Amino acid sequence: MLFSKILVAYDGSKASNKALDRAIELAKVSPDAVIDVIHAFDFPRVFIGEGLAPLPPSLNNDYYNLAVQTTDEAKERVKAAGVTANVDLIQGAAAEVLLDYAKENGSDVIVIGSRGLGGIREFVLGSVSHNVVQHAQVPVLIVK
Image 1 (cartoon, one colour):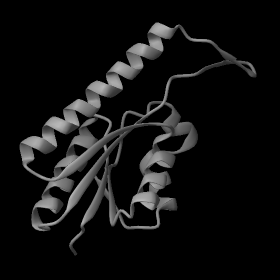
Image 2 (cartoon, one colour; image 1 turned 180 degrees about the vertical axis):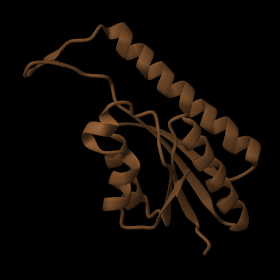
Image 3 (cartoon, helix red, strand yellow; image 1 turned 90 degrees about the vertical axis):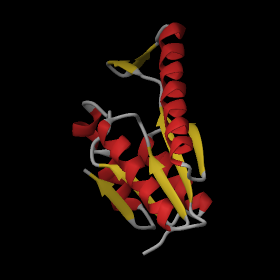
């Protein structure tokens, strides 16, 4: 099965690096394939009771700079692999960002690592990969 629009979730984790490697392999067997690498990030929030506690602007700035650095790593990897790729940094919840992007851009497949850098939210809300599999309109390749 050949794909021409490959969407990859990338957060810099070991699993997402493997997912990017697999997407690159898929792109190399399809001459006209384009990889869309998405790094979804969201600023941290701290709730105290029912209220949202303000965080120092420097923390948000550090978090954003880390997201930019992660995106730059992905750009370097696809460039070194010699495949056609778009790398985007999008703010929002990872699963929602990926599903919306796939729908709006006509992705043929979503490639995602089995575990990312989700932390404890993964246990409370369910993993990003599980959410994507449950709601995607296109095939999803989960890479372990």
